[in-house]
Image (cartoon, rainbow, N blue to C red; front, side, top):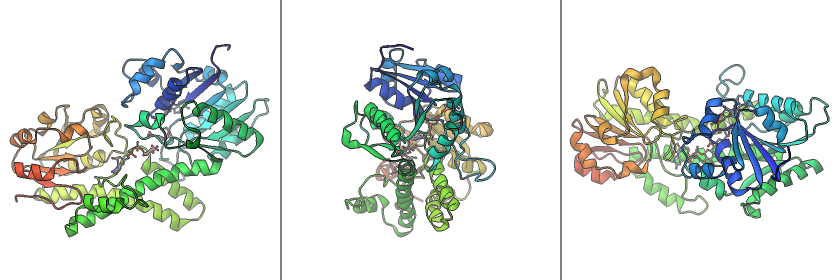
Length: 460
Ligand code: NAD
Ligand code: UGA
């Protein structure tokens, strides 16, 4: 196809990563044609509509500006493959639920199908970029599939993991800490790597574009997520100790984080980390360690997940103990359901676990969240009769025995808690799973306040 574009880029997988990442390339590089394809026609229809399938601050603006100009969403995967020079693959790589490695290893079926489809449809040489998070050495499997026929088409596989966080995806993509590109150290590998560097160099400073061998790149992504999650589990483990000893986890985090070797970020104690990636990527890392016989190493990383599970369970136990060991028939209001603020995503949200445990205790739930109610409804559909949903936090809290803050939405800090207190059943409880509200003030209003990792403030 002859066009005025200097490169044709394809992305397979129009999800949380594929959509924003490609929208940013299209936004920064009007000289390239960027197409995103997906097997899910509803998702593509949403990307082509005024209501995008994901909520991400700043995303609407850049999609609207580039769509139809040099950014296209389509279900025609075959045509997309034929017409592109570079193919990013950003399909989902969830934890395997069956067979060998069930509950731990990455399920690579979507990934492999994509590789086969590329092989089937490609009629000219392509650079294939691993954007999804994958087990180390997946590029080798990809190469084995792509090199399995001799039709004259040549492929070069690169690893270019994505480090964006949801809720800040656009900012992260526009000003990345680093862009990591792993390649084979062969002449054709380095040439392909340079082609990818050239794309990012349109807006990312050269010193932030890091090039490595392919295995280091693949592994770095898993390790980065493992380290981030480890920090949260570390501070959460300490929060439990604070609750027993009267220390305040925020003050401990501040004192510890002022050491520049440790740093202040990612030390917010919480009800536990959620999101589609931390747990799955650590399980994947543990599985790889076990595969190579490194059982102690695997156990070390697994403990990061174990502490996270403990944190969620502990939160429910605190609620149960504080509320006189029975939640049966009590109305409990969850403030937030998203796994973090500024996203509608609820994948692996701690709120799912907490809600389910509260329902097991026969509580009646009412859930409020500014962006995640549709996902919350679908996550809890088997408990329909015990859960209500409302966008209005005042309505949600009214008549409740307790509020449990699940997500650190800014809105929740700014509510009129005096009004809320008046509308609740007494004694009124608030369990702050994110340490975001003013605990002293709420206590003075009459609430019994249970923060994470700080002494409870109670009138009882
Ligand atoms: P997602 O589920 O939102 O999107 C994946 C998309 O791929 C889906 O729309 C699905 O329909 C599509 N797909 C699956 N198989 C396909 C096929 N054969 N052909 C065409 N489309 C296909 O997932 P996501 O959150 O975007 O994550 C994608 C990858 O990126 C994962 O490996 C994840 O670990 C990694 N990652 C995610 C984030 C994040 O914040 N969500 C950040 C960094 C890395
Ligand atoms: C995370 C990483 O931050 C990204 O770099 C990575 O690209 C991405 O995973 C991925 O591979 O999917 P994300 O899960 O979107 O991004 O969001 P985070 O900001 O990392 O938060 C993850 C969870 O940890 C949330 O539930 C959040 O509330 C929780 N968290 C975070 C804490 O409990 N305490 C903190 O101090 C920080």
